[in-house]
Image (cartoon, rainbow, N blue to C red; front, side):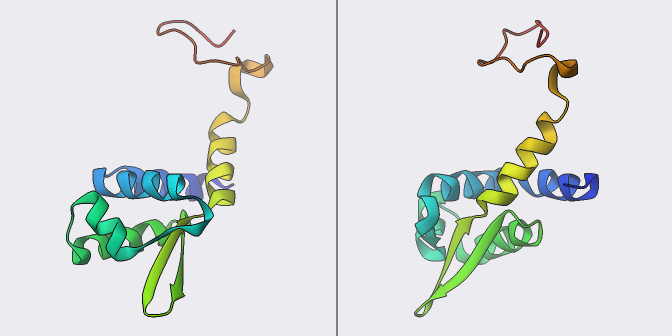
Length: 109
């Protein structure tokens, strides 16, 4: 992943509704969720959700497909994996990555 792609993806996630939408789609799995169900689950208007989903799609984080008359969205898992791999690249100065989250204030080593 290129730095510019990571910045775009992280920028897309740096908003409450978009982050919540993405997390919900990750939880939904490959089957995804229809736009209406997603809007209802998040409690936001369809028009607002459409704007946020378009932003996530431009960043490559979600995939849109048509199922009959509905638009169904799902997380783009390879893109998510690439972003996490980019963020973890060269983690811990080459030392083995810890298997659990380090305590606050402690280094990776």
